[in-house]
Image 1 (cartoon, protein in one colour):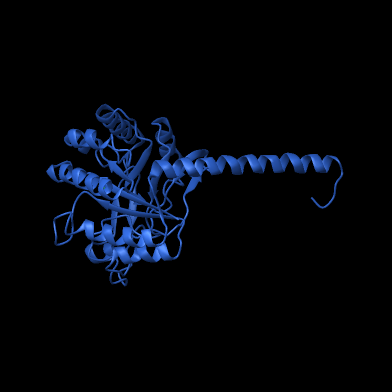
Image 2: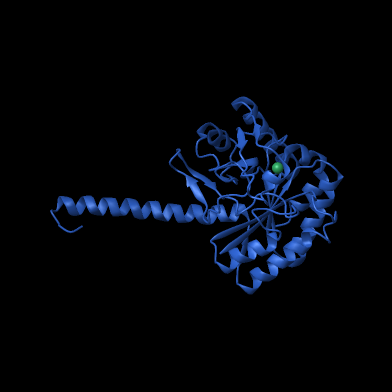
Length: 298
Ligand SMILES: [Zn+2]
């Protein structure tokens, strides 16, 4: 069981700068790794803060496109009978038109370039703005762009079949092998992809409690994701996000949960996939050999 703490940093203002310092201090104090997904434009605004945290071995820096663009279209069709569904509560069904291939490519490459200039490091992890049902399973063109940009670990599978929050609760990361991108790993969002501070989601009011249930169920990979902004009543890290995080970390520690980053999880799953592929190949060779020798019951 592994927990990934991740933060989308996208507000490109003073709040983003403050948040980067706060979150880095928090994770450093408790010695728990974390991942940020930052837009290229926010990276430029927060260049000093980003450069500072990039030397922290606990911090993994991924990208979140340059301008926070929709890399593909999204249609949400909320079930209005679900009283506490975020989309049903706050809005009608929405359609967001995805950008064309060339613009998506430009935006992803621009973000990597901006981050690399500041940190000296080209991101290998990516989080899609908005997120989608089944991630990029039907989007080989975008997977190709990500591969060209040197991105191998992505989180894009974050919505339910009707396009809404929360996600479908897949408990295990998966590779896009069927689409021809066996080296690209999807880490689906666990439950909800948005802010800890939303009043409610999927019929619940307590995000920490939801994560605690996942911990007690021994879920393979648990993602805890939030933003560099606040939607609740308390607009301070100390009074808001820290409360959620403390609660989750206490529960995780009691249950011997491992903390990791998207990059480290990628390395583990990739290693496992290579072993599995090697075993499958060996099995095939062995089977063929046995068939040749006329052995039965193989
Ligand atoms: Zn975002």
